[in-house]
Length: 309
Ligand SMILES: [Zn+2]
Image (cartoon, rainbow, N blue to C red):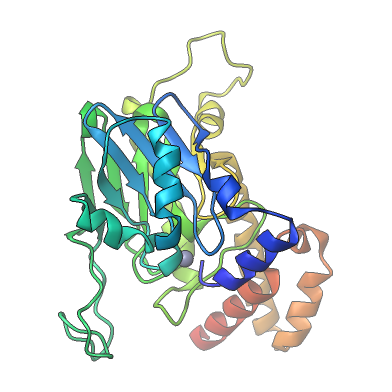
C-alpha cells in the first residue's frame, strides 16, 4: 500500500489506537498469527515454530518494540526469518531491526529499472535489496513446517510481489495484491501494472490447488460445503496487506469483478467514450461502486488499455 497517509487518516477517524491493536496477535491457527496493521504499517504474519518465528512483513521501526512484546506472549523464541511481500516502506519498516538481530530477510529479486545500477539507486545509496533474494520460488522448513515463498512473476501491485503459502496452516499471505472490499492499488511508479495484476492473481489462485496434497483436508462429514474445491477455497485464510483476514473465495470474487471492469473499460475505449464518461458510468453501477478504490483502478485500466489499442 503506497498511501500510508490514507491509512493513518482512516485509523485516526475510527478512533483506532495503533499501540492497542499492536498489543495482540490475532490467532489464525495454533501456529500462525497476524498483527493487524498499525498506523503507517501493514499486517504482520507470524509463524511460530520450535526453531523460532518466521515473520511475513515487519511492523514499522517505531512499532517493533510493542510488536515484540506481543510476540513474547506467544513464544519465547526469537524471530529468525523475515519474508517481505514487496518493498513498500509500510511492509519493510522493521527489516533493519531484524537484520541487526540476526534474522534472515528474504525477498524477491527486484528487477532493475531502466538506468538503475545493481548496487546503487538514483540517490547513490546502496540499492535496497533483501539479504536473501530468490527467483521464482523457494521453500523453507522452519521447525519442519513447509513455507512456500513465491514470486508472482508479473508486475502487479509493484514490480516484484511475493506471496507466502503455508500449506499445513492453510494460510496464504499476499501483501497488497488484495484487500477485502477494494479494487487493488497499483503502484505504477514503482513498476506495478494493472494488467499484470490479473496474471498475478491467477498465480495466487493456482498456488492453492497445486499445494493441495500438502493442505490438510477436513474429515468427511465435518463440512457443510458439498464441493471439495469450494471447501478448499473457504478453508484457506488469506491475509491481506491491510485489513482483516479473508479467504480465497473473496479473492476469486474480486478477480471476477475486476475482470468485468476491465471488459467495460475495453468496450468504452472501442466505443470511443471518454475516460470521464467511463468513470462516471462505472461509479453509477452498484456492483462496481460497492468496492473501494474504484476510481483509481478503473482509470488505470482505461489508460493502459487505451495505449494497447
Ligand atoms: Zn504496497
